[in-house]
Length: 276
Image (cartoon, one colour):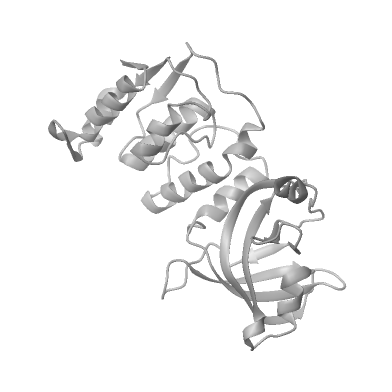
């Protein structure tokens, strides 16, 4: 019921964020046009954020807290922060903790709107993720390989958005039936995260997700994440990928190269890998 209630609160007219109390789905805190600082960790703590909710019409617990700036009652509590697409539908959500209003002033975004400054805690909103959400929101995440030029930190952020937006991007589509063939392009695989980026897109298309660590890949192979085993993975440029995935991992068979561990995971997960 909570998800239904949240789905009915669609934003409009440029509102890109919505806040709802994590303790009570009926306690809707309002929309905001921007959430500046959400993807900028503070120096003292990677999870700490100082966020400017621009063009906000606070409601519920957030409105109550805005009336007590500077006191302990300015703490609104924990919330779910939804990221909205151009039509106001939820693309994904972050849990944000200890939301506290520290400043409020009239907004230039419209009559009756305010700009709220809040402190909060959120270790899932990684630096660099905002740009990926914008690709989804604007419909520009339309082809594979947009992550190729990203550095290691931004690749991790890319994977985080692929994970949190997976249901929105799949739009309720069922898993592909067993017996399918998927092509994995190994040319841009240079480390673990680039492998996960390439694998997610091979299975689920641009910005797709199919695990962002080895345990998560194993979970995805059990179904519910876009593909049904058994399936065949055609790994193009696999020799190039093998030269990059040389990290040694401790297993029951001793130290094994990451590339070989991945092949073992696929084998145990009923995936036929064709190295090309």
